[in-house]
Amino acid sequence: MFLLNQYKTVLWVTVLTVVIAIPLFLRLDVKSLREWDEARNAINAYEMSVSGNYLVKTYNYQPDLWETKPPLLVWLQCLGFKLLGYNELAVRLPSAIAALALALLILYFSIKHLKLPVIGIVSLLILVTSPGFVGDHCSRTGDHDALLLMFEMIMLLYFFNYSEKGKKRHLIVFGIAFFFAMFTKSIAVFMLFPGILLYLILTLKIFNAIKDYKLWLSVLAAIAGISIFYIVRENASPGYLKAVWNNELFPRYFNTAENYSYEKAGFWYYLHALKDNQYSYWLIILPFAWLINFSFCKDVLKRLNFFLTTIAVLFFIIISLGTSNMQYDLILIPIFSVITGIAVHQVSSMFRFVPQVPYLWRLLLKPVLIIAVFYLPYSLIISKVISRGESSREVQYAYVMKAVEKQFPNIKTWDVFDPSASNYPLVFYKKIYNDTKGYKIGTIKNTADIKSNQFLLILNEKLPKLDSAGIAHYEAMRLQDCLFVKTMR
Image 1: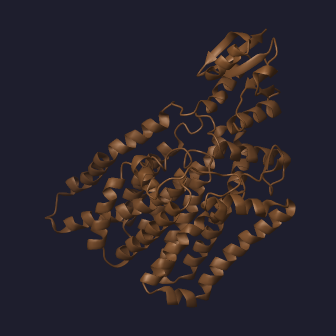
Image 2: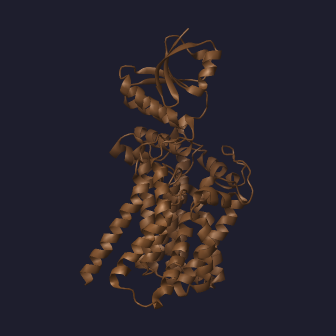
Image 3: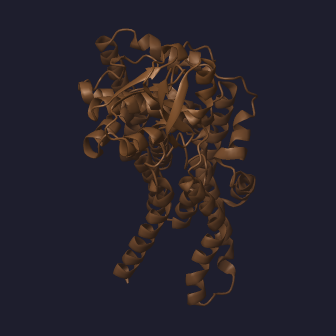
């Protein structure tokens, strides 16, 4: 019987892993690199892999003082380049793996520590059917956020375990996760600490926490570790700490940073973001989940719900008072998912007193209910993943560059007409083609610089500028919203 139960557990965990892996990994490398952070990270990783300088991130082989986050993600992308080549999959694989690990962590926590698998199953299914989690800037792009979420959730769940049991091993895991969260995205993780502190105060556990030297050691060791990195990094390239202050800390929070500027938005910006996109399908259920949990939860589930709710509410207030940027609220998605999973468990446990249903019906009822509830949001996520639609024309250069390479293999010298000052995807692909494939691709920003008898890649929307400048051209190839042309005066 024990072996039979083990096999059943392995089977449904395997099935769940496949179900959640599909939206995370399906067609992961199809779309070109996204603007801003993903492409900038890819440039950092490429230059790091070429130069061998694994301490200082660079842009155009100069110290990058615009993207100042610690290099953990970039290191993983460098490893991806070494193993998979210079491509989109290598850039995105760390995020997708981190997202999968986060989902499985929640399942493991519910089985190992709560002894309630249904909480983990429901939570991870909600997680991977949330558009904010499965999409750009999180699990499917080479951004910092999926990696950060994984470490933050490890940190939160194991701190809760520590607050319940006071065990040293939980503090060790908490401290390690805290360090790697900082090593992923700098100060972002500190916005969770006011909620942790408030929970300790409200539950009268603050005095025991203050007296526990092991807790202080875990926190101070993590901070000491990241401080050593910042000191070494500053010594390697002076000016880094000043850039970190301006770009990552309080100037960014108050929207006074030198290199970052965000439009001002109201206090409820993140609520609208969650409702309209990030957590759109499940947000309407959240108030009912809270009502159920606060009304019926007991013992550890009551405390876990209160712990996560306290952190979520205070975190929401903190980010809402600062600058507004869509991805700042992503940690709320796994937190809300667990809260909802607890509520589903509470509802299901209420039916224990119903007369016994035949075994076969009980065996089929749970999967049928799960499929009925999650079929629509899961199918919508899959549709989103396989969609070829693009929201920005600037990222379409890459598709045409690949088509030119395939259809015109002998044309190695050409230019891209791009008046913009910061098309990071284009910069990345140009580096790959020029450095690794023997191309000589340049960039032209002004029509006056266009020469006769020149091969040119150009977006359709830029053609009127060429026409107005008196440049005649003929079409060599039309792809996506771009043209590959040869100019003539």
